[in-house]
Length: 418
Image (cartoon, rainbow, N blue to C red; front, top):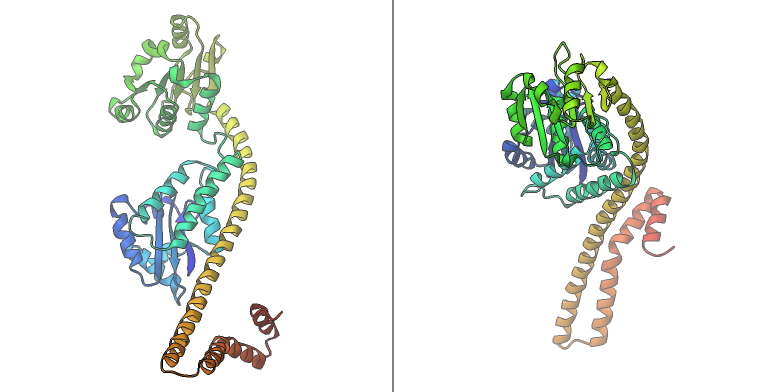
């Protein structure tokens, strides 16, 4: 049995290729059935995200193993082997275990240390475990990886600092306001970055969000998801006074929020503090706003400096995390080798018991027929001894004929002769 990990990710393949070999939730069961129908595959887990598609397998080693699996993957997705082959990576046994632990811990992610991947790996395992997994070694490998990822999160600072603009904006807001649950947030724009910001804020229990966007339809989809109110850009002037936090990210060529607009809002707020985070390029908020009393303006450059500092911290934490992964991989492989030995021990014991039962039955039959008890017992002992030492004796003789002193030493040691 061999543990195997193969796949492509953001480092080895462009999105144009990655999107062609994803496994959708609707077809995952069918894909797993097809995969496990391959004669060399004993168990499998499929991990498919926007940044990676990976197969984690328990397989029987055989000739042309790689070729057979590549052929299955290409046939399933109707893609040529030439297109895929150079982007694929392969990890066996120790390396496969280490790779999964690194993936689950966020060490192999596009954003170093991002926490979402662990949930994705857990879901992949749960989906594949629904009547498909089969291999106990594979199941143990995933369970071990989950505990390793938790240990990495607990013992290092790999996920402590923001390394995306959206997350950094939310982190900044949490640093300035003691609790986000009681503040009002205005989001300007409805693009991908604002979507991420809105979801982060929702996770931190923000109850009141206003989304201002040029087109109401796009904003409404996001608003329905996070429970926000939608307004048009023209309504910002009248509603800005309601916002404790403003986070803006549009593609507007000119500022949307001017100094005069903020002055009016601050007057209506009786100069209660307002945090404005402008993550747009070109800027959405006039720089002069930062000169107003109690208006705290941060630009995308301010966030980038936070991100770079935090990324350096994450990289330092990643060194600690890699040490944990290396240690845990060694422990898992030791367990795996012990499992292999346990199977051999069970087989050896079963064989010995079979010989014992066979010879004991013959001896009892001879006693029932009135044979001499002492002679029967001596014959039983002699035959039992010969049968049990037959295979080790042949191995010792063969090692001696081959001049293999190392094997002789191992055999003598295993027989308790040294």
